[in-house]
Image (cartoon, helix red, strand yellow):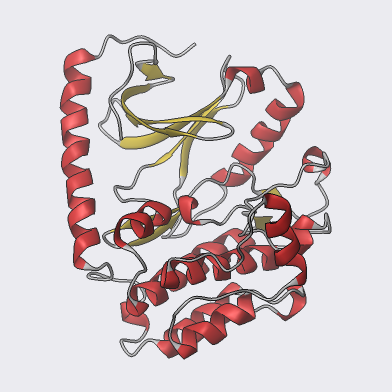
Length: 313
């Protein structure tokens, strides 16, 4: 989290902004507070994207889909204005680093943490798939590690699988290289099995600190995902077998989220109560999350002192 820059908005919709959480291909994300004191993550789209009517239509549909998603291990959509001059969406905010940042800083996660991570994400995907939706971008930067469990975020490119796919059928591949399933790369129909493939790649990364597919260029990387077997780093045998099942080339033979949860539970000596639960994170990550919480309080104080009530354009 970073303090707001001089040219950044101080408010978006009803939310006062207190810090910047980063930027992505679609837009920027800010830390905001409601009038009642609730902390939220507010995503706004880049202005040049906002002028694209096809994008607005897709954004409106995706927000409506994301509002339907519940479950303990997701970030709920709390508010949105797809028709604003600059469309925005507000979701629940959770203090914790992205999995990508955690592995960069601390290296591979312990086996028990990886199993708990997989269990939480499997439950999140079960909630998404039960609504006929596909997340389509399960990757380390879209997984937050909080004290009580992981959170799957960013349903910005989730899509219904009931045939209403025209708005995303633009010829542009949706997803992240290295975590995309073969069927998405090849432009075939994408189902919930695509998310399971991505989850397997995420678990491989969390357990070993290495991606399951590696290449010097995006083209090489995508070729390996489609045609070659994964290169898994060090991990225990049970987890390795589970990851390999998730990374099957054929969607129909991958386990579903509920089956995956059962397999992870069987691997953990602590049983279902430990997947996940208090103490699931190793000490260094607990310390990092605590520092983030302190930083959040500092940003809140700075934001209160400097708030001018201005609204986003």
